[in-house]
Length: 237
Image (tube, rainbow, N blue to C red; front, side, top):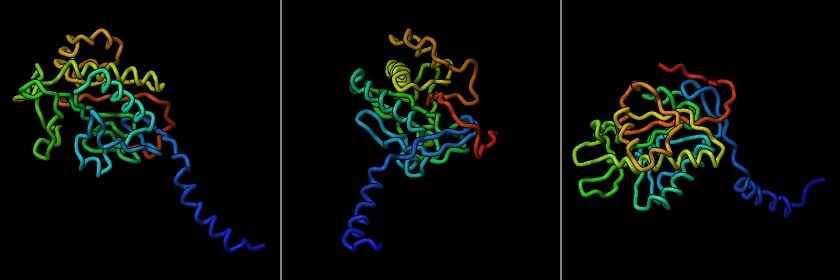
């Protein structure tokens, strides 16, 4: 029996509403951070009350996608920092592509579990400011900090960096997400361990030894979640 025209129009009207309120596809990671992919990745917000992305262009190019549970950890940690470290500004860097896979020049960042965080900095007056970002300094990745965290008038805010790592750890626990690896230039890591938050960082899986690049302008975090066997894996070189 043919549906009544009026009812058919009601059904057609409801379709966009049903799609709008349908649950989003859950994120599923495949393989490893250095050889994998992801389905259902989510884009991080470009900015929040106390944080922002390293580059609007990077956001537009889709280089800030993560697993949905990693996003929850990041936003949870930033919210805690807004309460516990008011006035501090934070910048996140590159994370991954919508479908994962190789994102040059990174060796990892392939399955939605890797995040770069740009170091929190203070200007010459001691004010917390976002790390400067432009094509001239490779959107922050081209800045060079010395072993004491200085780059011109900029100074790494080691207390803010330590507080961020502490809140990432706590947020990961609340969201039942693991932290597999943290990479920061060893001399800068030594400065972090002099902060008032140092005791709370014991047990974090910091990379032992020298990383393949300095990691002085950013610190890299690999989160840990169960992933399915590799799909569309890209060989790391």
